[in-house]
Length: 416
Image 1: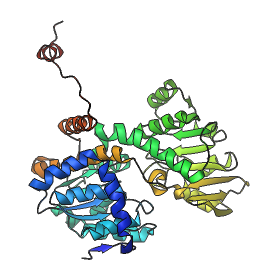
Image 2 (image 1 turned 45 degrees about the horizontal axis):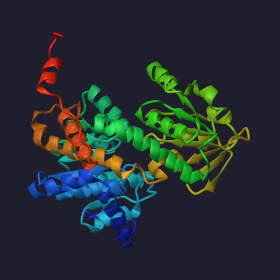
Image 3 (image 1 turned 90 degrees about the horizontal axis):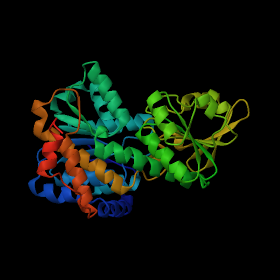
Image 4 (image 1 turned 60 degrees about the vertical axis):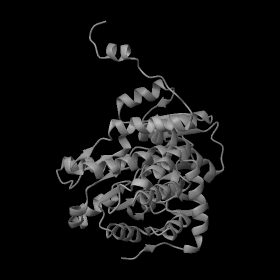
């Protein structure tokens, strides 16, 4: 088995510098590293990890290794891998198989190489590792105790597998933990998506109309940050409850066919496919900006756009301008892939500190409890959420109240 397949090991010093920066801003993971590097609960276990391979992910990988795990690491998106980070991890002795801009075939090869590690625990972002095992290497499932899934799209895929009765090991829905989706999906996606759009376009957000497709936790965060920057926000939805919520939060709500001619910037965040179609694009303002904050690049119909366009060119780094048959043009950021990380640096370190603390402790939960777990998608333990939240508050120097004995009794009594 190859130790690594990265682009350029000479980039390692830059990667080490970036990892040290995020380490200094991730107190939860630092605390877990200090605590579990002494007891090494993952000693003798192999972990395969497929998460966007940038500095925060690298530090999670190093913390797991410090806790005794034999790590194999790959990316979860062909554009989100940062080559200096991959080189730094390989330089530290981890098995790394990823480089920026890999083709679809190279990306699949890296997934396969990461799984040749024969993992006992899987940490996934989008369920690519789990799907590969079930589709192409089912024999590997015999070694797997279970795993953890980072994102909404991956949880959807895993639940579909569980519903069909084919999931071969338990998977923790890390995405659904309060300390993940309430903060990562909302505040992390909101800030990092707008950061990517601004840095890649060098355009102002104020006075523009931003169309947010989907009002889940990611959509909520994007809409909130766009509005705070001075944009008019339009939300499109298929869920009537979420549509009411968006309206009461102060945003316009309408069908995409009506929003398409009004928007200057479009952001899809649904976990579904073809939320923005070529038909929508043909009615947009000339030069409208399209971006995707969902895990896979099918939210914008990129295949349809590639087939329909009469011309395309690089308008700016990370931005491709497409000319449509009716003469209209649209600008797509990051090839329609995950905009906040395929064309930027991803979520802030403090946000991923929460998410990756959930990942670490959920992996530990699998290690300690896998024999008693069913082969299905399971929730993160409430104890894990509470522990992480309290540690985060402590890192901020914040103390909160606790219930008195009388209050506890009152809350558990039916008598007033």
